[in-house]
Image (cartoon, rainbow, N blue to C red; front, top):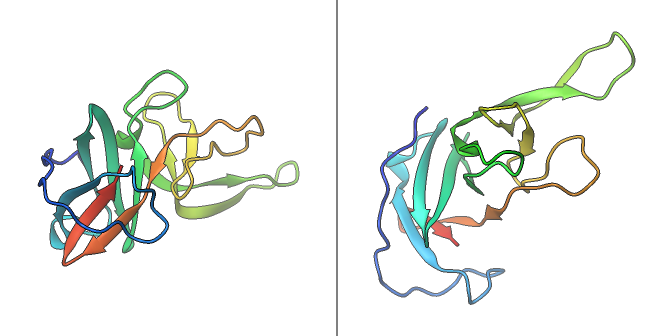
Length: 140
């Protein structure tokens, strides 16, 4: 999966979906059929790089910058991870829910940007994504 092309703002006003602040901008990313399950697009919005993902029909958007060393986070792999378990026991879980940084392997939850297995609150910014009239809409 590689980064897709950048789509400019379409410049038309639309009502904000429920739960989104009035300050959030509405940005058309692409048509739904152009973002198949298992693919992503990297877009620029207000000089910010944001990755938009389709994971089994669920849409996620995260800032494309790892808080560790600034890597292009959204170019990393999506999968699961090993969960806390007893010594010499390896339990794999969270399949299709974890984005792994391509540089140093830091793992973040797709739905909330939280760094896994870290209690200091490190996270990457996430953004709402909606589907409207067959278009993938990023609210950033």
